[in-house]
Length: 261
Image: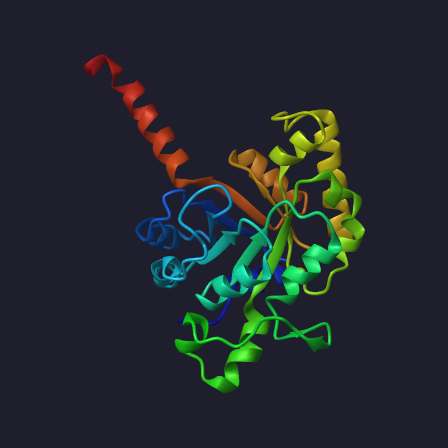
């Protein structure tokens, strides 16, 4: 098993990483993404897909990422520490937690990823899963995991916005991903991601994160919007996905050959 986390190393070096969603959860798609040069593969276990509690689900997914040379970027349904530990033990290195409310919740989630946390014992726990069994001896396991694992959160609730400064001060918080869709719902403008109030709130979140030196992520699919996001200082950008890409390409081709049908 590859032990270096290129995703974490990139964002900690102020580089930008580009990712794509795999709604199919297909190892083949993940491997192809890696061959294309995609930096990370977004896997959404909050809204879809198999159960993240099934460790065997991640065996082929992590293996495909290693073969292709990309990183998995796993959204869990919650920050349950026992779930975090289980997924990390299966070999995943990059996690993010949706719909957080406050700093204590975030701290407990980050603490579950560490053997040593903020100068005190963490809550990771020794294991015999893929992250330890493949490629690491007992002397390397603890230090390597603490250096390579990366956990971030989604800021998409007004309660989190109110607690943002405290959340950003949580030790070892890897990044913040901004969720405009759920944020628009919370702000009373459901689905209106470009509503002036929502846009202003996102700008304020972004500014606070960057002032705290916490990397930020967004979803942008238009090349001009992607460039603007980079110029605005975002380092983690999801640029598309498998199902949307299939639909877009094939619909364009079907339109082009409509006269032949």
